[in-house]
Image 1 (spheres, rainbow, N blue to C red):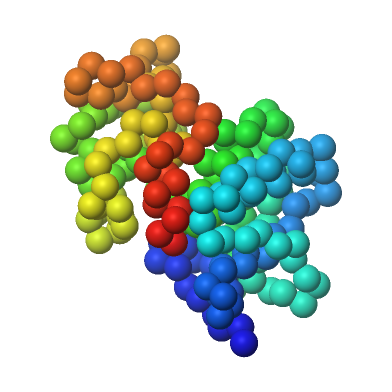
Image 2 (tube, rainbow, N blue to C red; image 1 turned 180 degrees about the vertical axis):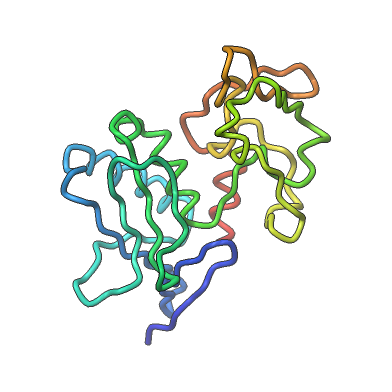
Length: 198
């Protein structure tokens, strides 16, 4: 028996089997054929540390993860409320860490620098941020962030590096301990723990 499952923070209806394995149907647009193996590799990493299994979408499945090209980022849903989209521009579709980051968004993960207690750990340099990208630095409420019991994770795949969306080449994010945050290219230890709890 298959029952519908709605995961907190994720606007798409997934399906959970009795085996407790969560199957996520997906479809990769043909324009991303050249990146399909890289995308599948990122899916396999998530599968390794969770009970999630990504499966190719069947033609009769209306709720599925759609991976397309040319508009950057993650879009939670379309009009039917269960059609999330990951869209990758040319350079993003060739970067494993970007694909992994966007897949984590599709599972309900938010940016680590947006956690509600971030002001205890981070400096945000608003004057250095591109005005069109200010929303990337919004802070979540405690109700909207599900990992409040976890410490700040500077190594998370969901953490922006220090120069993200800079308009002038100066840092936009830094640790209050003076830490310069580098681009993370793989799941952190805490990312893996969180995935295991889904």
